[in-house]
Image (cartoon, rainbow, N blue to C red; front, side):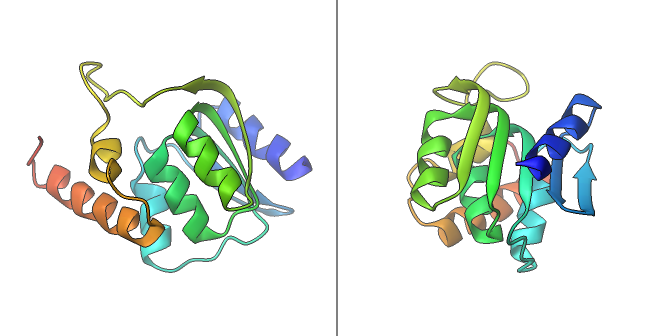
Length: 142
């Protein structure tokens, strides 16, 4: 629990995501899911870590299951993400629970959530997220 409290403090200080396990703290101010997706792509293991994240949707939840984290707090978390995390035995908590994550423009669903909409397997979800990141970086937005 102490690790999650520390991770949440980093969110309160402007970070978008923070991993914490005892004296090991890894944070990012980057927007979006790429920071955690690249850890999963590179097969990093965060067993025992607690994570605080600004936004946790289905895509992020599947990535956290791959990373083997112990606990995830989302300032905003979807109902589906909460279900996925608890199904995998990850302690899940949130400030606000929502039905879906909205894109940055505020006019539709988040592209990462669209990418995993019909996927129910964590490694396929990661692959879809990585593909979507690549398309967005090339300026191909749908």
